[in-house]
Image: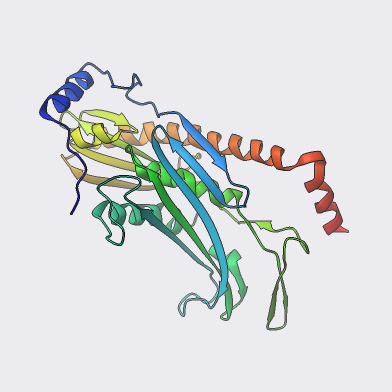
Length: 292
């Protein structure tokens, strides 16, 4: 099974010595993210995120299906990840790696189990028909911190997506095309975002948004998921050295501040995309036509 190329002894020693002096190879502060570039596709629900050299494309798709037997009044929301050799030689087609399994589980907790999306709003006909929503993350380039990049991409795609409007007549569900009715935004209850931190020097030194090199040299990782209101969703200790309670509290404080900044980045990108799409006030005109 292919593996990620390990840093040499000299490279590892250089990275660790630099971090002892609070210096990172790319010149960032220890608590700084790399530059985030967020763009949206021509279709609704497609978000392209670049976090330094890490790049993720998220796509939202929806279909009408029968609900789960024990969830007759809830729609279905799933998050999947696709890691290909294009992103890293360590990934193989058709073989699920430990990284992919961990990534899928953390994203599921952060976005699905936290009830970020109201699944009740996806119910069309109780016990018979619901929307099944799927968020697929395609990893295009891997240079560390896949979790945060995937989380940003999926959350941005969910906010950007517009689901087709429907009419229910008795037991008949009519899905309207975009020509008939404007699609509607998803019912998002809050916006959970992950901040992953690498631990060094026995867990005493915390580094935000680690690159692949830093992740390979670190002694453990902590992923904190929260929303901009400071509400915690999950704290995941991803192996390695034991983390002191005070260190975890420090990680939470850092994560809460970073989440506010990340949420603002997504909001600005959505506003910019909305302005570019709303040429000559066409969207407002269509909304008025629908209301009439």
